[in-house]
Image (cartoon, rainbow over all chains, first blue to last red; front, side, top):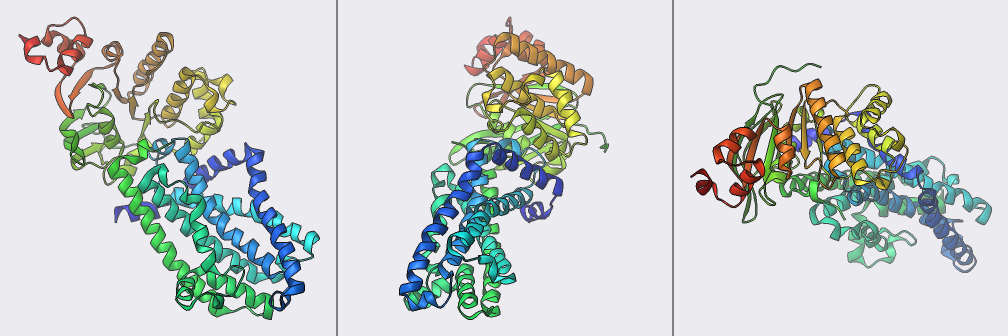
Length: 272
Length: 252
């Protein structure tokens, strides 16, 4: 109960201080900023050419211009959203700074909010240039989806934050040996999120797993919009509902791990 | 904001921490008076860092209580944290941020008004002005210690916890740090608890010392009183008697 009260008591100034801390880190290294945009752009170009080829050779892809480009860009929102949270957390582990942070008045909830803000900033830096470059490269603008794009973006970012928090919880619990999870966890969900193909392609038992993920409903919704120019509110409602469940579960696992770290003394000892 | 006067800056009661089968701190009870400088002494593995971690609320006790500036650190540590601070050579500030950036971030975390002015003031007091724009990771050990001290003094703490504040520093820099701490204490009336292996430092700075061995307080008192009681010439000799369990022999 005390952990929950702590987590919900937020000071915007302390959140701002932590965002400033990560911003200083980001602005101090142009290669890091470049790297943020590099992978989404490379992925967009790769899938853009696949999209171009498939549009001429597959009736399914031909139904909706840019369906694969939209898929890869939205997938990057989820990936970057998760990575933005877990990498900012790892920065503290690498610099052995957790001990200083948590003897200051900073509360775990404030730290988590700052990780989310940084995740949003990192995602925008990574994905927006790739989305803009798709226009001159392939004559396709993901922004042509209009307002529903904002909904897709928000749902995927929220799911990415949940996964990021879960990764943080695992690293707090198992130490730096679990660091690799920050890079690979989200990819376990890629096949079942139906990013580039409809969920009906999956075996029936796997479809149930897929439909338990918010991301699957977002990608199904995206295809409905691209193919039929219609926003499926049902998919959005499922995504939102599942996101609430994932946020609650992952935030709970983070708070539990944080408390366990205080039991084991990991906050002062954790590092490379 | 002013706070009601407190009888003890730190009060622990049967404070115990076990890690599996290992008892790191074993039923430790002590009180630190406001405005005093207290040394926490003991050999490696005696339980000093574990005790300090519980005082900071970073580590939850297995049993017993720890109260700092009137707040129960296991449950309400956020009532005390803005009024205290901590420095240790083993907990570093982010290397890639400059000294100014690090101090600015912590200034905001502690809710200071006029962060920039406070950073400049501390930089001047701790002779750090010319290092403000340098990455913290590029500093020498002595410079890093001064930066860590600047961070620990940002919020003008009523209670300062220092874990080996002069570890691995050359004698000149270590003396400089001790002089600064003496001045800070005289000017602010702050309470200081320091863990140290340097007995000359403890004799010079501390009003009182707590001797830990195998997680227990085995003796305590003013440095001069302990030296007299053990019939030794220095606190270092007292420390060796206690560390090697020669108390009875020494007392005879």
